Amino acid sequence: MAQRDREDPHRPSRRRGQGELESQVLGALREAQDPVTAAWVQERLGGGLAYTTVVTILTRLLAKDAVARERRGRSFVWRPTADVAGLAALKMRRLLDGESDREAVLASFVTALPPDDEQVLRALLETAHATDGAHATDGADVVGRADEVGGADGAGGAGGADGVPDGTED
Image 1 (spheres, rainbow, N blue to C red):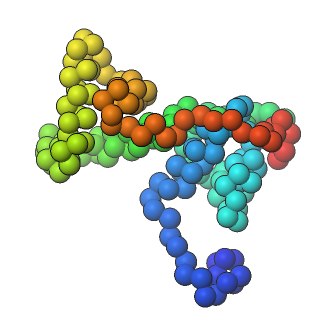
Image 2 (cartoon, rainbow, N blue to C red):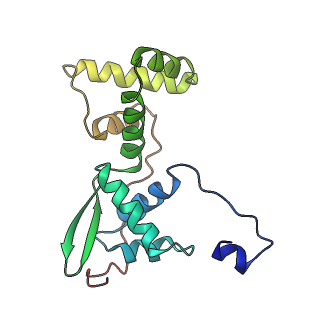
């Protein structure tokens, strides 16, 4: 039985959605002004996450090129290299890359879009073609264009964080 269940046996357990914890960790990193330790991320997220869970998520994000790390003393400090939208776009590209019939997957995706999303996608594609067909590699160009056509909510930006450690924790 999980630690949370022992603390309150009447509280229903809630399973996180796929990628939810990665998004939360990435969001916490984006709040920091400087690279931070896993212990800082763990404290920022609260909720009783184990340190090893936070390190596992950070390592997975590192493998996805969504974060970078550098050694500082005996620990690593971590910084985001992508925002939440960039992480979602990376997941979408990886799913698409895993399919043999890309055209069918894209066709199915586009036909299932609500009209507003389809309009945003069309505008983004027109803008991409107008700029010599350049493709965004990190999602920053597309997210910026989505803001211009009203398709992004602007959330996930870097904000200030107080109490950012100097990286000496383990």
